[in-house]
Length: 233
Length: 235
Image (cartoon, each protein chain N blue to C red):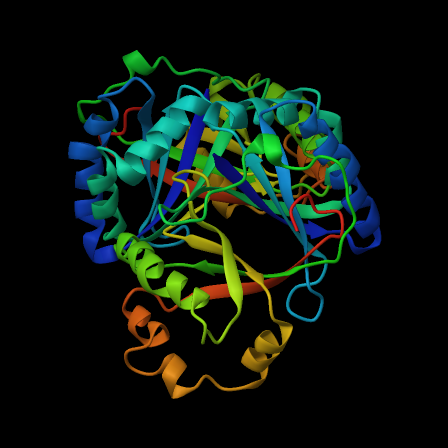
């Protein structure tokens, strides 16, 4: 399964129409076939980064299904929808991702909801990392062996669950690049992280934060809030 | 057919090894299957932009072929080569391109693409990447009616560019709205004139008409001067 990850720079005055275009147009159009499903519709939380940014994640069955989808947008039945969207966003930046070997398995496309059900928004921390040249494999292995289990430990500083662990596919984005979609389960822990320096135990020698500096020192965290109707919470 | 477009930010001291690996191992290993062929290997001409930047374009049969190629690179027989390339570059940025309806290049006969690394002369390309303010379709239509149709009728002695391909970015694999022209430079002297002449863009003469009208839907693009390597399959 492939994952089309898009960051949309939305026209501020068109934000509601943009969201509606995804809720009614994109999600509904995909539901008519079996090639793809919208999984998440996120707003980048205001106050934590760039304004009017939306992140969407669409799961696509495989490469052939992606090509069919791309052709529908370039010259088929979704062309008018894409043209409509062009008027509602300044631009979008996309990349196509695949799961890491140790990622939790993605939901089967057939099980993804296509009817909108409203629920409480959920906050995610999306981390995107860029390992040093030649260190991608080592980083993926170490993150799976050390970082992932640490998140699940009882004394974990952050209460997060990795929903998907991904890397960018060749020819469809930047490489080397790893992306973790992490669902936050404790707002107080997040606020503690934001308002306190990292302790020696968290960032000192022997810690993941410290030891992983041999593999990468550049990443970006985004705080993303699901729309109430997002197919996956 | 898809075209996998990759821009490599190469570590300067490894530039020679990077190109050798592409020429001597990557191109041949890729050709052991029927899914894709390296078609262009281009060096960004120094003095016209970033240093040590390489652009490669790989023709891929279809979406399934791209997925298989990606799997070969991540975990299959090309993974070791991909890892070695990774040690010679800071990063690579890729996108999957679809030819627009009027593009002269639609398909490449993969079985006819050279894979032997034979040497030939060098060519210079101007790769234009544009980002319109208007719907992408309108930009592609403008390029067709007011640029491509005009340029193809230009007499050979006045021809600066041969527009060999026009692409849009396949869904979710890069920026939208974005379109790309691959243009072979036919006259270096005319290029010199373009670089040194102050153009008034008179709306009644070429290229003034296109330049003036184009501002209605875009004013941001980037031209890259790319020089084929001596062994690039297309040049």
